[in-house]
Image 1 (cartoon, rainbow, N blue to C red):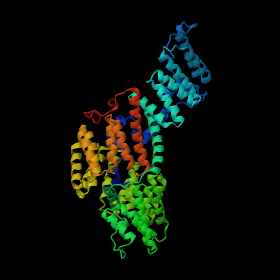
Image 2: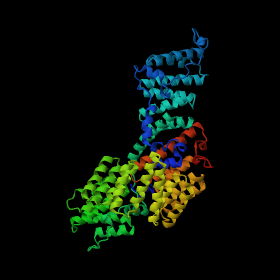
Image 3: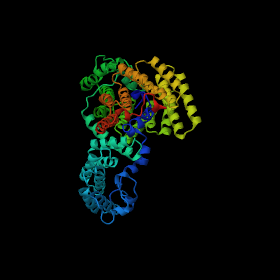
Image 4: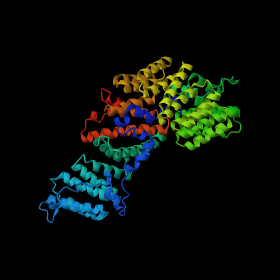
Length: 582
């Protein structure tokens, strides 16, 4: 939710664009491109509904999933009235089948394609593959998916790089919920088309999304909970200006579970917090207010672990309690809003934010945290209003100020107003001058300047931020991305990413980014291993969907390359000279 989670306010599809990934990966990051584009173009990925009454659509369609091959293979005089060779007879049957197909008479078309297949000499594999593919097209209109797959497979055994057969079998596999097979076929299609066909790319996007969701749902239920890095947790708590958990009030019972839990929070011994809180909650000697605070702290840690069910129970208890102080209940509402957003229940999340605002309207955290959600959803006007309110309530809140600058910059980019872009950048510079020891200012300003291709200045800012906080792994990741954009320096980028992992072995962003680069280099097996490491560190099902999409894309490309005998390096859009970042 906050910049503490990734070190960036950039949604991941925007980070993909910075990597050049839609071209370089071909598949994996397509899921994270702007959904508006997807919605506008997705219609082109679908074939007709197969209705026999929709004859005009069938005959005029350019969609490859219902197109037929070989209509004009022979001159008319060669198909009249008695062909002389077996091949000519087969082609005549095929032409009759095509004619029936275009009239919506799919069963009749299949009968003629049967005759074409039976008649065609086995010495003519390309012609025979065409007849199988055309019959598969007719079966597709009848939604006989098993027959479609069988005929496409026969066509591909005769012509392994038959794009239409690959696409059609991919669609049939999708319709029978065999998503892995569908992904491999659509991956092969995209590769053979050089990633230039939008319909194929959108199809791949759809399959990756669905397969990623399916894999993530199963894996998240059975995942082994891993504590985030200490730096991540510390940064998360620092993103709140009014968190009642961070108060240093003297505790008359220094040996209580709550007291020990808060001491563990202060000392960075985060794995001790949940047991200590549980002890407080179960204690017969504890009063209700202490139990409520212990539940808030335990629920917060559960939230950071991605144990959303347990987090929800604790936060619900606090919110529903009549004994909870206003600040405690408001904090629980804000954090439950975050939980709901992680579960893609945006409406419920905003309802919790609204409840927190009504309960504690002077709490800057309500506006700050909600503003970040609005930025991620590209609702920039609403984000700016919230950030302004947070700053008004807490003028020295650096996070809200610099994120407001970023929101102003994003808004200016969307309306393509160069004056506003300049003003937003200058405002971010002023924020960095006002808070010279806060790395978030330098981090966000550096990312903005990178986008503006002011790479040398951005690099200086990353270097300054690293000097201030050398243990912040995400800074090395973003600086590594910068050097790829700037000069295509693969070695420098890899060194910085490895440095991030050395500093923080739980830096999911580093594994993900390094894996993406390895895909671009054609090192797919290394990439898959890195994505697997990233998966173990995911704290939400949505994060898992993202990483599974990348991993599945890499696996599919690896399998297809082996099946088609392709050089893996030929799949890479990232050359040693960094041309992809020119």
